[in-house]
Amino acid sequence: MCDDTAKTNSTFGALATRFAGSNDHGKQVARLALMLFDATAPVLGLPRSSRELLEFGALLHDIGHAIDHDRHNRHSYYLIKNAELFGFDADEIEVIAQAARGHRKQAPKLDSPDLKSLSPAKRRVIRGLAAILRVADALDRSHFGVVKNIEVRYSPGRLIVEVDSKREKADLEL
Image 1: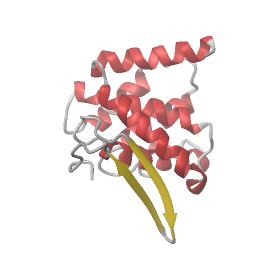
Image 2: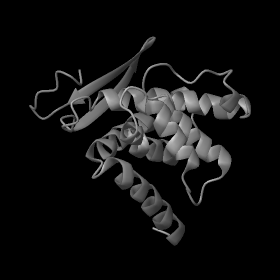
Image 3: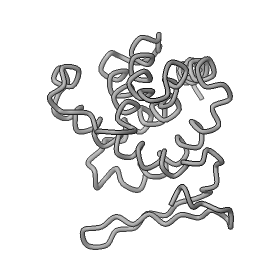
Image 4: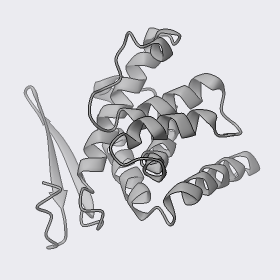
């Protein structure tokens, strides 16, 4: 791991710890989101470079709970946008923040002022990452980390996600 990557990881880890404690749920969602990304990025047209942005968005997606539960996704967006996230440019931080914001309720609206300033390609990335993050978050709905592995396969017009919970009860996640 290079020094820049280590600094970046510690910056995100410190932000997550500050607002989410041990952040076990964020780590589990990030693990699941990366598995989903690896399986779906080609179909969604997501560049490989957006994988890291998804990981950090997943780690930070719930930090807004420190402010308010009901609108925590919006508060997560604000906290991410206004944190000092070294090693990322403004567009990358916007992608991370918008993906975190889009993890619940409605997807980011393409005509929002924050998105309008971004290129159509970046807007497409945000919508794809938000969709993946939404599914990954649902796969840890109980916050108990019961989903151990997932397998993704395609059939005509469908994406099928098979869940392995190693015999643990995963009713909420399913």
